[in-house]
Length: 510
Image 1 (cartoon, rainbow, N blue to C red):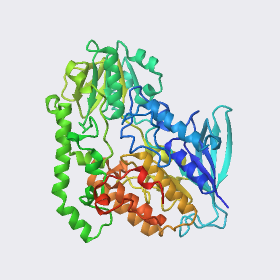
Image 2: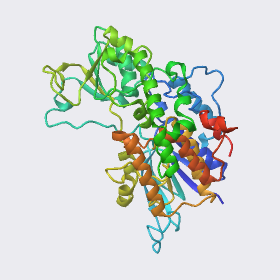
Image 3: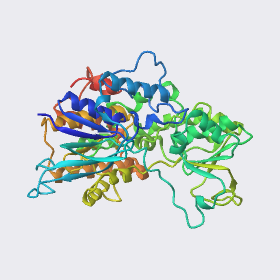
Image 4: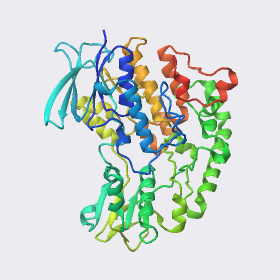
């Protein structure tokens, strides 16, 4: 008999979880706080495009339509693709829209232990408290299993903290977060920035897109100032010097040069011997980015390597014409490790005069871990999911917390192409529910989590809490495949297995 599965969020991961629940005979119910599916793709900046080639960002059993010819589709095309997927598999009927989950709580019989020997022992059920934002009513649902698909790029904005009397309250202009800008329709956003001196804080994708739109609206008369702490290896395309980036990083040979969690002596020795190759590939890609973006001319060459960038899942594609606008003067780049507000604008490091501005847009990201924590009613589970302040969110296989029973988290840990990673994780969770395999004991899972934490700190450094598996996505997928009893080697022939890039279509079948 199938289980009642509560899925929180109807973005990419939530839709995948719903689809694979149904394929295994379970009974899903999806709670979505918005009025539409799509997650972050429901409200984007007009110029936003897919950050990875569509060949890496697609459902394994639902390819992109032939009408989409671009390698990097725009946000409308991505949203339509997601809608088509949901329609094709009849998922909409299982979704409760405008349903905001207030909290979830694990209920156990009075004679049951809260922490069984295994998180899957016992007779507990999850209670989900849901607010209907249209009817202003609250209802409790009981389910056997919960899948959290809340993502990390929405919800609680990351607002920098400022000393007293140096925050937005002393500024005569307006301060908004990038999520507020993205929530505007295109015409309203354009009129909102028109004729204003705009400062954008940040240098990731939202900051690049917003600053590009502001510069287009205002030109050199009212240039947009981008204030950043660290330059990044933001890519112009996925073809460094004409070589496809997946051929350099997304195959098994590339992963041989990376030290792996829990690796043996042979793999460790091989990774050490191949480290010069890893360094040379990184320099090869960096030289292409420096050449195409003229980074040296603008003083924008990062001090860290491209390898660290890809290991941190920080790769963003730069909007076409961004550095042309920098050269024209409609975008001004300013580096500052800190900033604060004054009446006229913002004060930057090593600047005697304030940067006079009318509008500050904080493209400073989100507090995804706090959103995850806030879902749990139980303080103990809140403590568990946050883990140590010195580590990433502690999830076995980036899906399961060893001490939180009957629950999975999908789409929080990052990869180079989150859709295809989320799909394989959903299939793994469904095989777990089906009893295809059993989890190790709590201590073994926590040891594995610790090994992955060390890996992320080694390769992602200060960005380790993003839980990025970018440099080892095939190795990671191999572990999921082995758990499920699948053959992890998906190519035909030794050379193909070693050198061909891996992608979603390699996992269409078991």
